[in-house]
Amino acid sequence: MNSIEYFKERFEQWQPDAGHNGFGAIRQEAFNAFSKLGIPTSKNEEWKYTRVAGLFNKDYQFTPDPQPASVTAADVNRLRLPGYEEANELVFVNGFFSFALSVIRSSDLTVLALEEAAKNDFRELVAKQFGDSNKYIKDGIHALNTAFVHGGVFVHIKKDQVLEHPVYVYNITDARSANILAQPRSLIHINENAQVQLVETYITLGANQSFTNQVMEVTVEKDARLEYYKIQNDGDHTNQVSTTHIRQTGKSNVHTVTVSLNGGLVRNNLNLILDAKFCEAHLYGLYFQTGNSHIDNHTIVDNIKPNCLSNELYKGIMSDQSTGVFNGKIFVRPQAQKTNAYQSNKNVLLSDTTSVNAKPQLEIFADDVKCTHGCTVGKLNEEGLFYLQSRGIPEKTARTLLLRAYSADILEHIKPAPIRSYVERLIFERLESDIS
Image 1 (tube, one colour):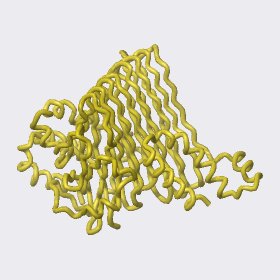
Image 2 (tube, rainbow, N blue to C red):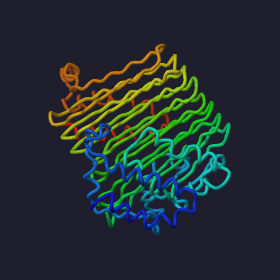
Image 3 (cartoon, helix red, strand yellow):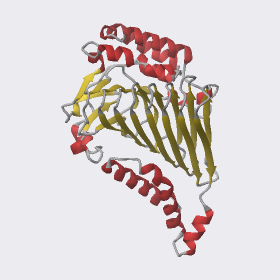
Image 4 (cartoon, helix red, strand yellow):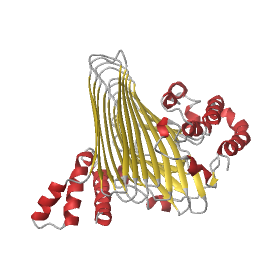
């Protein structure tokens, strides 16, 4: 299908009826941007190593409005993450937030339909914060999510509250009867001196193709703390473009861990905007790809104000015919003196048919800063492997031990114990089945 013409037809059918909820002008502007930019190709520098255009040739079922529920509570029960008994659970089905399937356990957590929040007491917050990611991500796929924004969710953590229950976000795609295009959208506000743990995961039901084009925008106020964990372990027939955009508007602490273990094509955009003095941000990532999978991690750390600290470490394990991309950018604005920013990307290639394209970048416009970046791509440590084998440890076991140790300094940053144990088990199972 001609992607632009297809979405234009759907947009024109739907937009007149959807304009009453306050997003009409925003949608129209976003769709104009999509029509101009189109689907990214390799000519777009930000998508040079990730071929996404072919994914839009699928015959997707796409609707701008929620359909009758196809996912049941029994389905969700089979998909829940460890520790769900003590968690707030937010469930998206085919890109639309489901109040019926979600569970809110914290009284200090406000969860509203995004359209409702845009009209009530939170309208100023929504007007100010919605679409902030557009300043950093300028491509047609991102614009497409905004053009059809509907059925999204607004989440607010009250001032001075340490949320007792973590927030689990399930992005569920029901592809049991058709190929599905889903576009979840969420806006999260963490008020002053509040704390929250946020865990996000993706699941596709069925064997048909799915494409998830997701955007989450988060604002972190003064003295607040956010721990954000993303777990990607979907099927080979699934594809994702996932954007997480976090702006720190007051002195605050943000801690992120992204674990990508499976999926056909996965593109992660993670933006950290340090927009206040003395902000602190930590970005950790682990990707372990097999088969013909493709992982693309794009990160931005934008130091706008002085005296901020950021630390970034991403590690990759690539085997079979998998391919990877790491593109990390650190910006230091002229007024952001006394910035400390560190970035490192390390990759282990387990076969001669896998590859990684890495591009760490610094753009520094201040003179009193400490910034470093680096990248390594290589094979498993042969000396370590020989040492373990010389002690009578079989080669497969030795390789597993080395790779578990390689992963450990990322996994140790997953602070919720049930989630850390869950991810460690996934890694162990992958190593046991894939390392030969």
